[in-house]
Image (cartoon, helix red, strand yellow):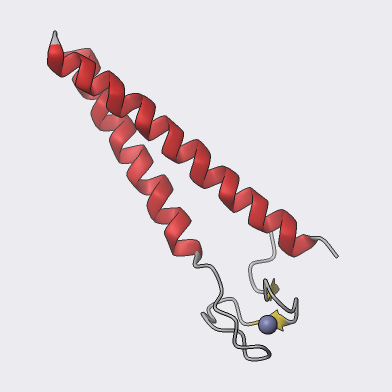
Amino acid sequence: MSRDRVRCTACLEPIPSDARICPHCTAVQPSPLLDAGLVGGGVFAFLFGLILTVMTLGTTRLVGFTLLMLGFGLVVGGYTRYLDRQDKRRGR
Ligand SMILES: [Zn+2]
């Protein structure tokens, strides 16, 4: 994992990893924070849903189970997006 060798998504020139805008073609770079927030929220929803599912009964348990599934989807989705972008950057 080389986090300091980030490439622009548009022109593929190397840019600083914390740059939001490419210095070569001024294309706005996708923020890794967005995926991190997605995964973080997913983990939170997953844990909260797990607690609800285990600790409660009836409708609340159903809500907890829905949160559990939602959180799982967010984590998997966010991680897949992250892997996709890593692949794109490594390619070429
Ligand atoms: Zn660029």
